[in-house]
Image (cartoon, rainbow over all chains, first blue to last red):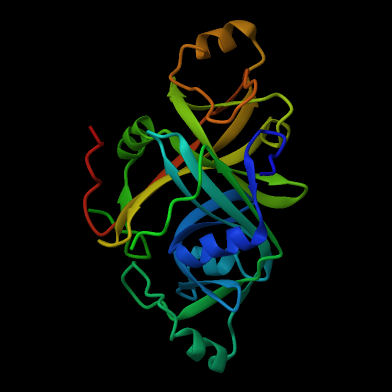
Length: 142
Length: 142
């Protein structure tokens, strides 16, 4: 078990990608009007990329295109004081090609919010890091 | 019920502050080496400020001092597709005064990570926003 300088267990990239493939809610971190911004989103993984569905005119679509973003997932048990988090940093880009967008329609990715959400953003995970505290990662809910 | 342009219910500042007072885990969003960074932390609220406990030499302590950060809490029920999030944006500062730090020792704020965590960071919520999707905010766990 490898620990970081804070005493947290370091998750390797395979563990992080497994956790990403199981999760459905994450938080995208970007800059909006020169200020740090963060927004929860539901997502899916496709070819190793984080895929988010939004509307073309959303704050997210405007702010998170062709820029470097962070994306975070986590799970904590406050009673047991255990948990883990995975952070991805990489370029976000709009999916402009209609064929690519049509392929992404097949993902299990339906927006929770009402209204048309026909626009996809892909985040290519350049840097994938994870930490765990206080025990093993819980098995996925069955 | 007021909706934003995405069809999400807008939580007012009182609702947001109530949710902040109940939560114990949030995510601080900052810039590290010119890249967006996000890190889960446990926290407490004191005089309306978000208070985080860390070590003086942590990445967080170095990156999040005397700068504008975002701080996010949320709760989602993926089966019911309901949830809420609150985002605070404001200046983060180190608590340098020993008297102030001693007063913060009384908070219910014990770091989950091992090692000495005798350093406090305060975030003054300048902008407090919240959104809810798909139903009322759950009552706090008793």
